[in-house]
Length: 152
Ligand SMILES: [Cu+2]
Image 1: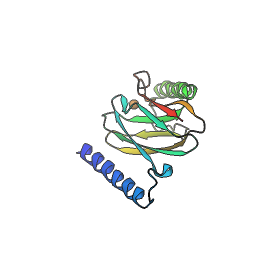
Image 2: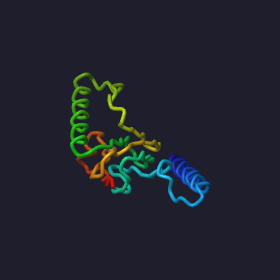
Image 3: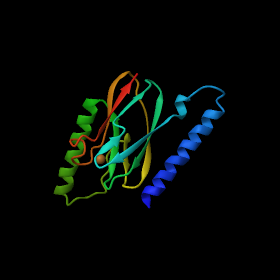
Image 4: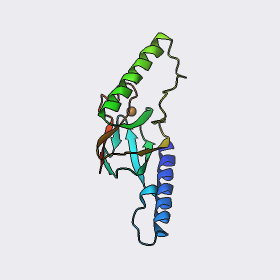
């Protein structure tokens, strides 16, 4: 049932995007309106590679088709490693304190998507280069739950 709902939401979005393109009078994809659709599964993103323009706001729409909660965190490899370390610390702290799950991530750039839900992450990659979007739920990043973002 949730799967159907997610599919409907995605379809609506595609229609909305198409409608936007129509009044542009010839300009193909207006960069500001572009939404890149990503599906989350256990534990990967589909597709696992995307290309986006530098210096422009990009919106990613994540549809969680998996059974677990997943996150999306954008940044370069060093930022991913840092966020992974922070998450691991929080897991360790949570265990020590009896798993207080109400804790915040303290990072506004992290999108969390519950199973069967969807969410949007808007991000501007300032410089061309290789970046990643990673999921840092325990074990997922090590499992390879990361998407390569080529910024051109
Ligand atoms: Cu994940």
